[in-house]
Image (cartoon, rainbow, N blue to C red; front, side, top):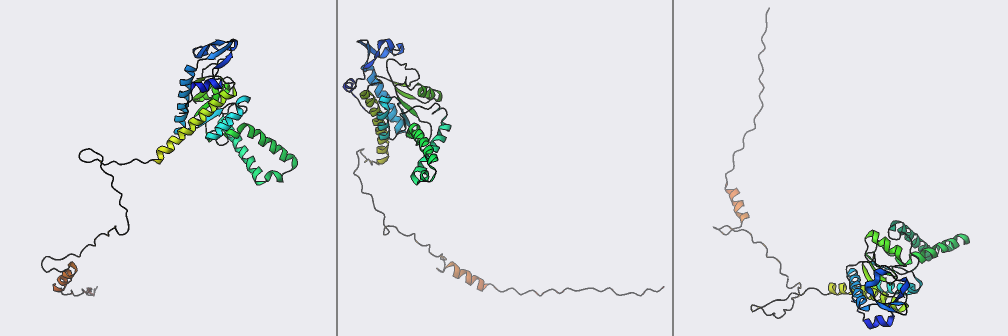
Length: 313
């Protein structure tokens, strides 16, 4: 995924590090040597680490994960924005706002305000306010757009960070470490690899090298999403085997039409075994053959009167 050869890295200048007096001893395992007081990075170690990082980004994108591209230094701003937009991922290419990850609830309110101002500009509400208020709203819109334009469509915290120059973006790396968000970072010889989950030892100042990193990450995202779409588009096939174990010939699927659908047979009326008559006819004959019972006479209520006796004193 996003295969890059060592020759491409050499042509982009990935192997050039910083001056020897600015080096970080923790980067010693990735340094090949020095030339003209400049450290040379060992590309034999950079290439497999780069491939591992790109495979991680591709697998994360295949699982519909979000990778935040972070590169605020001047040499990487334009390239990062282009590649992040190409693969449909959020990005930060201007100043990193403190708490952009750890205080994302407040940042979300700022994003909501940015969308409100954009809606006001589209429906012409900014033109109906006073001139002074309109200028203030336009300045607020420009400020929010400069800082939050790349993450205004990000619904929540990202699943990973892709950082160019971890020393320059140390605040972003520290916030990601606090929240347990994995970091894929380009680490030069003057920075320390601590806090970076997937280290890419390489030059983080050359424009061609930065373009190589960003383009590779964007390609990994696109390939990861493409593999998922390809798997979803190809349904599983049912293979029928013969008695000998060989693959049987495919049978054409039968088309279901109205003519092939048969209605269920109606239930026949019950017949008696003796005369072959229906059950209803037999019941009528039985009721007609039964003698009618005499009707009982209605009982009349009788009242008894006590004889009156005359009492003599």
